Length: 382
Image 1: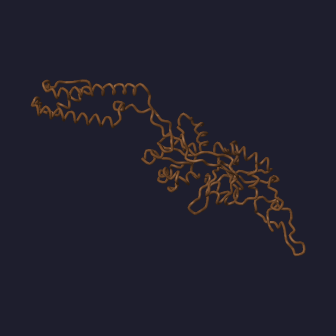
Image 2 (image 1 turned 45 degrees about the vertical axis):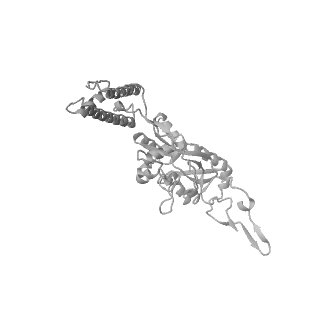
Image 3 (image 1 turned 180 degrees about the vertical axis):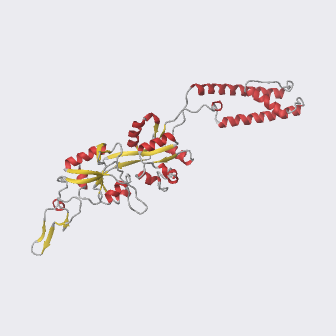
């Protein structure tokens, strides 16, 4: 029987820990597997930890020699607690692509997940999301944090007043008023021709001018005083004009007095609608599980809004700060873990952004470990 002894934690060697002979039967040596002990003491061994600098999980800096130095972060605090309790030291390495890890077309993995898979690192702890695809190539500790995926857009700005004259009514109301004006003018022209009471050079234009004058409270002259049917019709038109003027003037006054803002995009359904109509684009952090989901049109949650990412790779960004800057400069929604969005927005000014009131999905974070590593149980226990 071969297995791992206390001096080897990475399964790089196989030692004989037991044997069987006809005379003595099975004679086991001291083994982690046979004694049921867990690897709680690494005896000062050095582990390689793969991370990227990502606020607020793990923030790195470099000294004068270019050596990576951990500065602060929630996951750094957890890693230090594990190292102290389990008696190991660690060195920091970052993936060349600076990504968390997605599966590439050649079936290899990028980023931190790829480093652990290729045994270039012993573990990775940096806000890594546990997914079924990643479980195929690495082991995960039990979850240590639960998060939600949401998005952020630019805070609504004040509506422009360049077209304030038409803002009091919607386009449907303006269309109805225009059609009413044309129909009323045509009716007045036909009535006057039948009654043979009015013979201007251009009767329809003259009637239109009069009817329009009513709508702008200017009035005018029309020689149809004896035609009672026309007078009743004009009385109704004047009543309509008075109501129209009152509503328009009151709404215009309030619109010019009170500062109004655009409607914010703050729900998942609202974002899906804006993206489907081409008014908004969306994206996420490059090399994360979110990019993989957005690029998959069959994904039931993210596939509906991932078309803009599939068409334009620039919608995936290199950092959270780039993503939030993109939201400020264009009609763009940046999708990421809620905690990361809140921390980054706090640094850049929360008043500049609108957070979604709901979320796409819930996610869990865990420590990525080598596949079938013997110390997973110890990490889970701590």
